Length: 128
Image (cartoon, rainbow, N blue to C red; front, top):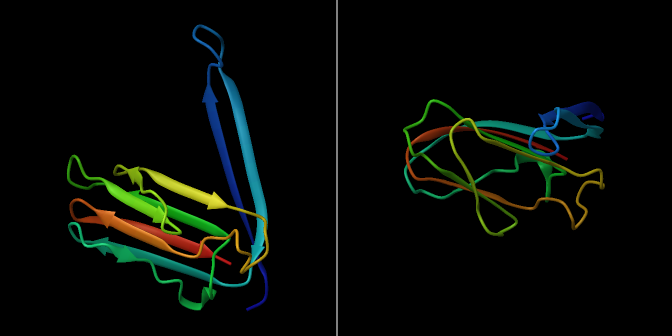
């Protein structure tokens, strides 16, 4: 596949301190990817799921994980990247990680594991 462009843009608006006017923090990243996998997973209770990297090869430089609502109240999706400690997401939560290093660099994401405490739907996008 020929290299394709992608952009991630985000804005956070909040007061820098109590009582002060809002400040807007913005960041954006534009990069390219040669391979992508997009998955919509219907997870079952407490069954760990290793995310397939499909045609990506050994690693991903961009990871997008979204825990779609509605899910059961109190639902928690635990995301583990490269075997590390889990990051908890509630329904409607998301995790985006991107790094401009080259594909298959040791600093890239080599594994993603998902565990949900109740049935839920998760959208996963991986780019390399």
